[in-house]
Every structure is written in C-alpha cells, then in structure tokens.
Length: 112
Image 1 (cartoon, rainbow, N blue to C red):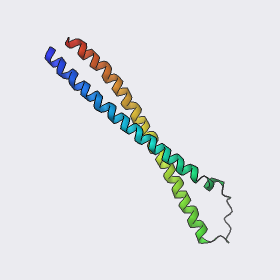
Image 2 (tube, rainbow, N blue to C red):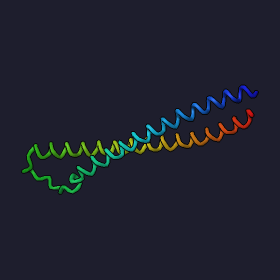
Image 3 (cartoon, rainbow, N blue to C red):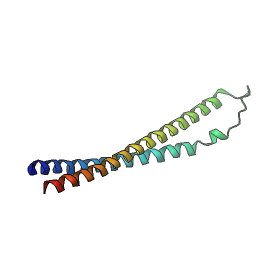
Image 4 (cartoon, one colour):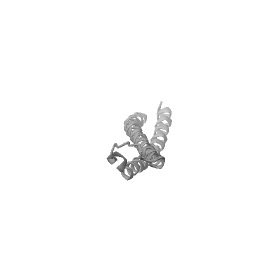
C-alpha cells in the first residue's frame, strides 16, 4: 500500500500545480475582462445622462450614434458579467486547491 500511496501523492501534487497555474491564468483573464468592461461602461456613461427627448427633429445619425453607444454599454456589461463569472470559477478552483492540499497531505502521511 505504501507504493500506491506514493503514486497517488505524486499525482495529487502534479494536479495541484496544474490547478494552481490554471487558477492564476483564469484570475488574470477575469481581472482583464472586469477592467475592460468597467472602462467601456465608464467611457460611455453619458448615454445614461441623455435626455429622453425623442422629438421628431432629431436626425437618423443621432439615433445611429445612440445605438452604437448602447451597444458599447451592453458589451461593457457583458464583459463585466463574464469577468465576474470567471472570478467565481477562480474562487472555486482555489477551494479545490485547498481541499486537494489537505487530501494530499493525508495521503503523504499515510504512505510513510
């Protein structure tokens, strides 16, 4: 049983390293998405300040510009949501790393 415990312990150590690297990469990606989404929303926040005057004298170019701004706002919120979800995934990966670390220590102590 000692040899089996050592091989399982080695597998868990390798799994922890890969999981830790993956968690760091996903965390960086989620932070980039959160920052990009925040910038998009912040740069186009004047869209929310616009008056709701939809009089007939506004030309089509005005509405095209407003539509483009609305699309940027939507993209910003989509980036924020995706970044937040990836942040949650990273948090769950961190919990897995901790659990795996405790389990790995138990296997290592059992193989001695």
